Image 1 (tube, one colour):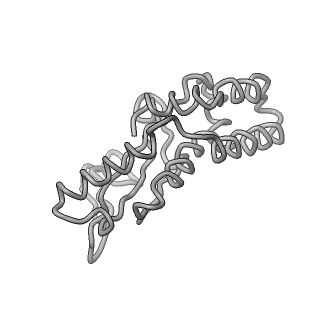
Image 2: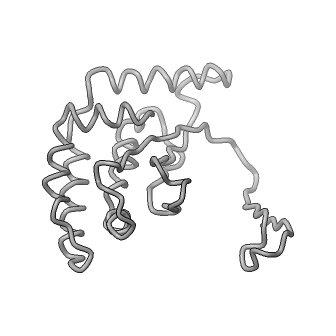
Length: 172
């Protein structure tokens, strides 16, 4: 789900101006204000209307993904993963945004709201403040990935996680 759709969601529901109102005077020295702004913004995002045709497009893309996999749309589940602009650049937002797993077709829109709203958790907002990232630069795309019926899972590191100079590959 593109950042363009995120912008459309914010602008068509007037969330951009509401977010700006609540973030203009945020101060790292006042964590309560960050918490309150976060709760208000996330509440607004969870209740705001989607742009016309948004939910229909989401269902069409889900059906297209199912067709590419040779499945019926009701038979696949997806992971919805945050993909915030700038998160893989000089700054690291790892672990700050929500990913939701095992989403059924009927929960796509609702899950998108939660992932998009995670752009405004207190931790994410404080991090952007600390790093000087303006709130208007905070944009969220969401990747929808088909879940696979795995027997196991793991993590692979291309450098040892406790000793970055060690070039050993570690698989857990």
